[in-house]
Length: 177
Image (cartoon, rainbow, N blue to C red; front, side):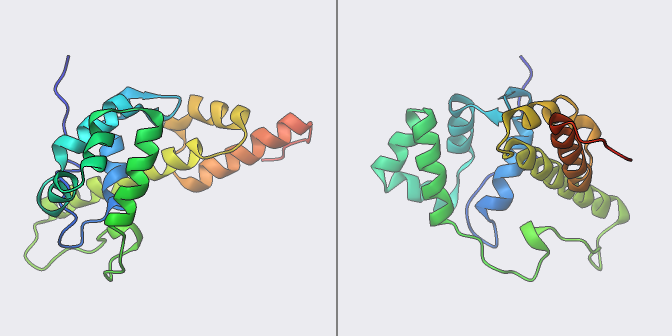
């Protein structure tokens, strides 16, 4: 078994502008090979979260036995309950960055190579966003067909257009590209 690489998401403290809604997609990207039907199972996700919490986030778990219990006994329900509490405890606040906390400008002393690495990390968040958008589609048939070709869906617009085409085809409507 290969070792997991959490370098894209890093540890989560909930401090210094770190937001759950930015961090979780990066964690899910790190765990992408464990996805089943577009989701990381509670048995994989919750222990990963538990080992990556530090600082305020770790203290929050230690001071709340009910929260610790959710992490230690992963089920579909405990995953849902934990993620709701996690997002409520560490809500996103506006920071002046682009939505999702993405920084899209090179810093004064930052090398081009370092700025490129930042861009790669940001692109992983965007990839995870498209993946999560696909997973959120209500129609199982549309969702399933998009999941089969998601490597081709490099933008949300492409995913949306393919979803529209799939649903039109299901209704027997002629598609003009």
